[in-house]
Length: 260
Image 1: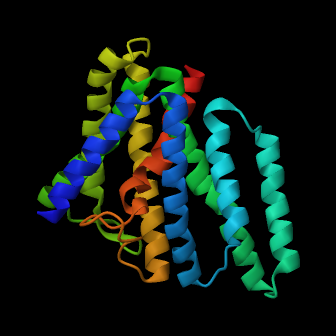
Image 2 (image 1 turned 180 degrees about the vertical axis):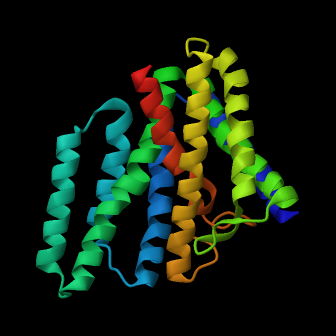
């Protein structure tokens, strides 16, 4: 019951924010989510054995998020800040060899893994409006649901046993079939300028990106020996547990809109 109630409340809050807020106001929400996700990411990385320089990595993540939708901060500045972050990490850390390499890699990954995708979500809102954001989220949800029930009914072969034993190839096929059909049908109303064939291809890309995002977060949690990324959402775990697929799917959708 707790999982259902928190899920309903979370979904209603997300719907209201996306529907009623402007793109700039939505960016403020995205920055809060990025900060919360970063806190979970930092704990996961720490459990694995790497040390992320907290404030500089958090700042780079937030800059990455703000840079994407409105170009307030150009990409060159963000990349330069990331390189300076790594340099400072090397100079100030008392760790050496492999640990400092892992620290630097984890620090550089934070803005790419968290900041840029959440900024892309706001970018979708800025380019195509609230309907496009809801279409993206709905497609990811439909894909996840189709994979779950198809895998439950027909799943026999693990998709990635070392990453996520419960995911099956048969379940993935369900997502590949249902999500593109949904996007073609729903997209014809909310994105009428996009040809159906393009929407079908976008649906396939979103399924692939979502699966990779789910497996990537599972890989991080398994390496850290954690069941959930956090406890912020009752019955659902942490922020990363809820947006893992969206983090990889949002940039795909954003690039599609920019190209279209």
